[in-house]
Image 1 (cartoon, rainbow, N blue to C red):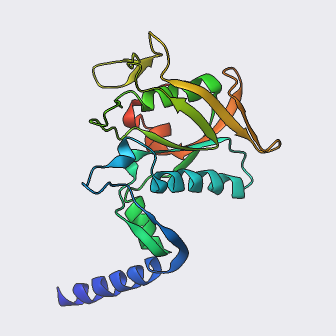
Image 2: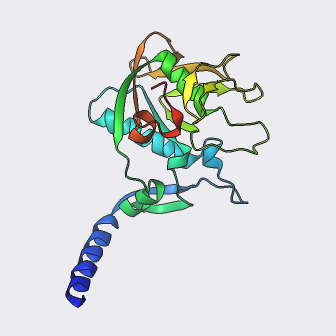
Image 3: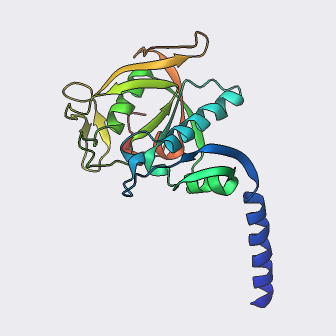
Length: 210
């Protein structure tokens, strides 16, 4: 209907105007792919992935809601190369899905298990990828992918238990804002974890330890 088309076009034009507002600028190129088109964001850190995790961390920090660690799954980051001015539309290129930010209280053991699960599909030659691979803010760790993953899971790819052999994730450290230093994780302590509902609440990626 012609009248409906006029209304529709007007709405789209207004939405595009609002989403086109410039909200930031990057001098570096935010990207997730190598020169052959391989999706690096699903197998290693990328600056887009770290940018997304940092943004979640800063979101709760700026709202004065204590946050210790923030994570973003590689499968939820979809942008090609971005540089220069950033708009709301640019952010939608990074995150095209309708997820919401969440904040959970978890133990240090849950953090360790979460990162172990996120790395389960990675291999040394870079031949596999996993949308569950997590980019992280507020923490750092060493990942030994030469050690086979022995995490336990059911037929639906849902976490059911810790690795039966050693952990691939080692030397997990959490950043403490008061000291300004990274300190070894306390497996029995409580930490505040930021992320998206897909990973933290809805079993996306099989993170049932949360």
